[in-house]
Amino acid sequence: MSPSLSGTGAHTATGRPICWCRPAAEALSRPLMPELLLAVACAAVPRAALKMSLGALAGSLAGGLLAVQLAAMGVQLPAPLTTERMRAEVRHELALEGAPAVRHQPWNGIPFKVYGAEAGRSGTGAAEWLAASATGRGAPTRSGGLRGGGVGGGLRRPPRRYGPGAWA
Image (tube, rainbow, N blue to C red; front, side, top):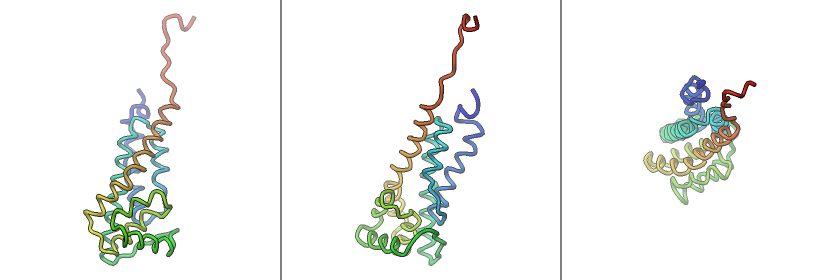
């Protein structure tokens, strides 16, 4: 079986680190959509979809936790394509709900990096943030990757089996 179809070859050796690094970078500062890359990578190598999805979630959580810690120390990372209105909305949500406010992130269009930075500035605890982020980010990240893997698996043609009379 070729490396790209086995899920253990060169494609996944490159794909897994990228699927971890891109969400981590997005959680810190970069204007990226990690779920889009994840879905494409999982469609390309469907057998690795679960591992890449879990890796993307781990990268997102690691980046988010680092963003919280840096903001708590007063470090202000660049946040391109974000607005003061987004930051104000997140501050309001965090004041009302605490760390569980991050569950709104996948659905309201405000980048995860804004939630991480504002959580750090508001003094949200690391453990509380990590637990809330795992819940809030987990379902969309895993489902995006698994959907991509399902599409990729559905688009693959099964290998042809030729019998003794197939060449006649």
